[in-house]
Length: 587
Image 1 (cartoon, rainbow, N blue to C red):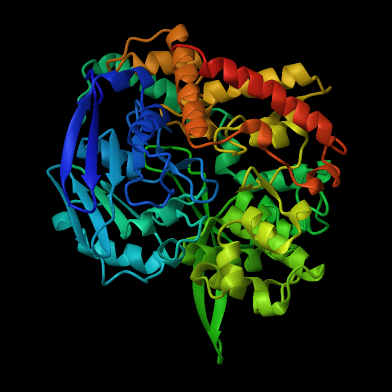
Image 2: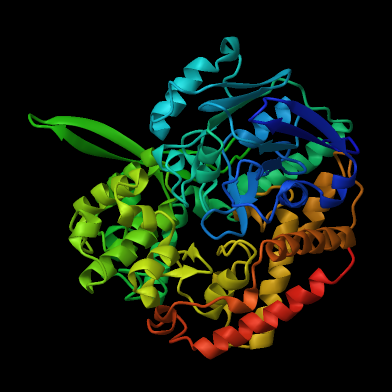
């Protein structure tokens, strides 16, 4: 907690409804965010049980400085992933970090399975497990509307409350079901929604109304203003507010690093039709920001959907970004902004991770064309560029309509193991690929990353920046950046702001709210957190050197040419040696 010497953790047992609060001085060594969440996951998980076993924990944690400084807006969720069977780690913005801070909790640990369909209500002075039978089965949008009316706190909760919830995909145990946070943000990857569904937990409502103590207002306000000005008066964050992350479409396409049609190609002939400028001109209606962020990078797009004959239309609003345009656009060959928004809308309502959904459907389209599966499996025709079949397939995937969709709902790696087509099942260690085929940095970075995300170490950026390939240099960059992001994700900082929050700024900010840290302390914290993650993965049986990458990664040219499988495996081995050394350290 701010200006305290302990971390305040709320424990909730969904089975019994019992709660307890612990004040943990020892967790201060992990700073906050992903650090304390990793430690709490290690303490409360059971490697012998399935990820969806009721006793396996969900951990939510906010960072040191959350909401108190600009762009420290995210909450981290840690769990055992039902998709990969190993470390699950996901981040979401919106209001949740603020709500947890104002409710008085740095972390929330949820275990057990409720006896009936339930949701959890957390506030400053009350925690209760409540009946959710009336909202079980509702989609994400309907659930949010219902709970906003129910959890109103006498009208005082506007801006102080967050509601996270799952859709039918989470209820049905789809291994990459997501959790929606305050409508436009998500715990997207690795299947937190399925874990909540396995606990009969439809939603969590968090409300807080306490004040935040700042002991040295003069120093705090000076640092706050400096950071705020960097966010709003420089070009460090300008691109995220302007066109947003879809601005990446054209550069990646021109460089040949944009995965297209299940990564049969590295560029899309209709990229200009679905780039950031096209979305802005055709669909953008407003920009929003997470609470505590002055930037406004959330881009909301609209299209008109005809729902009945006689010119009966409704307006559909969804948030869009680069990853969604890749997964539900180029990866499926969709060349219309309206059609991509229509696909995003269905994914949102079902409560699915958009990236995994798009990659799974890309494989299914390829597998159907090549005879590994038939329309008896898919129930609809799937063809690159034809979005109508994908609309229906997403609904079948969410519902688990038949054996094929239940298998596909366990991820593309699992589906390919059942039906074949593993060479073009585009996953990395069981996690569906991200939207970058830029070179060894993106591929190896995802393979060795703690959660197999492109955001673990930003390997794709090294591919785009480097002028020559040096294996040892690349491994060092990936390893050191992963350590650095473990530290910054203990704040928890939006990664868009990583240039703003350099180390001097981090130290100056934290030391105005009760910390007393040095640059060496930040390095030690980062190493301690990464070591904790690696030990979790080891306890769960993950073996880095056993990772096998699909052949298509080495067939379709990247923006840095055709990749060599032996070279990729060599880089993974080099990284593994550094990771093993870290695990053997006493930190």
